[in-house]
Image (tube, rainbow, N blue to C red; front, side, top):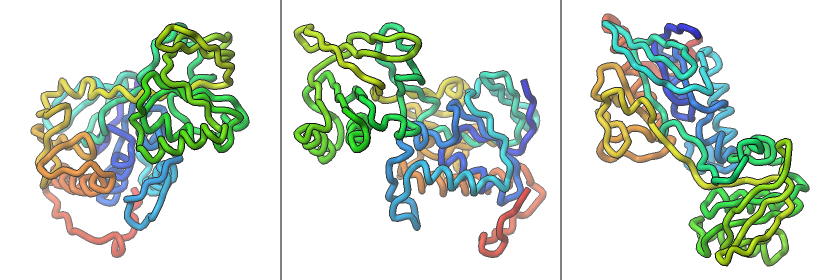
Length: 336
């Protein structure tokens, strides 16, 4: 257990949370970041690190992974405390600060809190297969960090959405064989990519198994040998595979934050647009987790909200000081 004292606690290490570290640092404030995932980057890192993003200013195209790497370089001068692989639990209000206890019993004391939690703490929707836990992170993965792992391997991908279709297309370029499994005849992915998927089947790059359901796994010591699937008539097929990638989406949850007496609307935190402050004094929400009239769920909108919330944190933490606004071209980088 550690006790940490900082100016601002940031909940969420996605792109918006990371940029908040920069904005706070430019104003001379220290920050601590807590996230439930093992690595920084949120969904950008966990779900689509190699997918291009097209609406970041000055980047005609940048992969999600590159964006996070650049944000990491941008915040390094401010030396933020990063507490990964843990969730925020208890919130206590003191006279002039908040204390938050995490799932690993760390306690963070801060004058303000900025919630940049996206859709909340999230994890994969796992298929109900016996003993699946023993194969996870060995030969069964719910997201891809290094696609080179699957080079010249036989890979089974299950799911009907964009992640499943996108990765089937991408991995077909280097993998030995791709089995694509979905329980329904219709896919939910972008129609253009569905066409590409079927074109790759015609070229022998992908074998589409529709409609099939998952039945069981065969293997030992975390190494998968066969994935058993069945059709609607209960007829089974045994697929010899090296890896299995189930892409059934995410289960998201604000968790204990929902019990902090914050005003919610459909699991989203309501804020004042001009400050990004919630109904609790000194607690702000930015990015996809917040809502106000006209809100757009874009990364660039979250970046703007990070600046707004950070400036308002400064005013609350330093009521006796006047904040003289300066452009970064004038002040440079304010190293703490």
